Length: 328
Image (tube, rainbow, N blue to C red; front, side, top):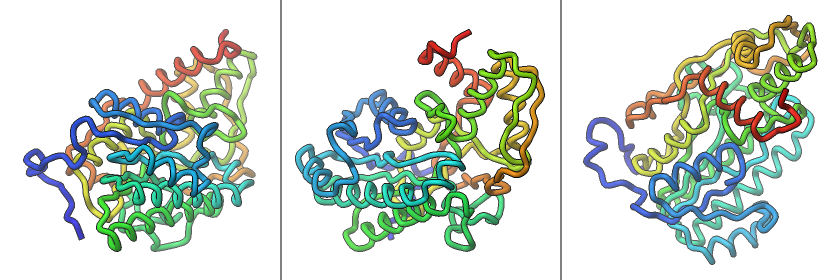
């Protein structure tokens, strides 16, 4: 096994991602991919992209051919079918099959093209529903998954095993990162498919705009979640590409959480909504708590920069600027 690059000696280690590297970012139009592309460009790397209209990453043959043609030095696999509780619970086939196909195509294509580095981005939902809190990377596969996103989680777990297998069989310098709940510019605000934070922003904004006396939200409001701004994630991804070469996944989070009801109160303050918040306990809560243990990432020198309130305010402003019909 290649050792972790952690601790004080990291500054003396030559970066694993060379200066001016050519990096293919799969999923560059999404929340995560767009942030990673911005961070790579700012660091002086050449970012290679290909939109879904020109390349369906579920198509293994075309994906391998594309990567062999462009020969990237590194690949960041940020492409995925993602969504909130409702989407995961009602479309498990698509969440399982699409993500498996994307992962198999891109990782196999990177290997065929001789890419020196690959970063696979998973999700904190891979951990057991009743995992210890904060969740260490060692909790993987130690208990049952959260039923509402089991299909997506299993696809991401398969991706972790795929990365580890390429390392063991081929000596590939491929790594995996497990981000916590993310938000920021580029987020999805569709109420049918979005995650909790952008959905709350939109719900409270529209309630304020329409003068609604109350907003009803799913669940009890008691589950606790951790949120990380996507630009902080991108900074962590760049650090991992440069400094980490171990087969174990690395959690990426901010190290603290809050309840969904506390999150709703913060979003209400940012959006200016002053009405009542009611909870529909007949709807699923999801896992009771998901807080990641980020000790491994902190040892590499990572510290998040963007506070939750500031990040929510900036995300709200970003959405308003790009959604003229939402402005009041």
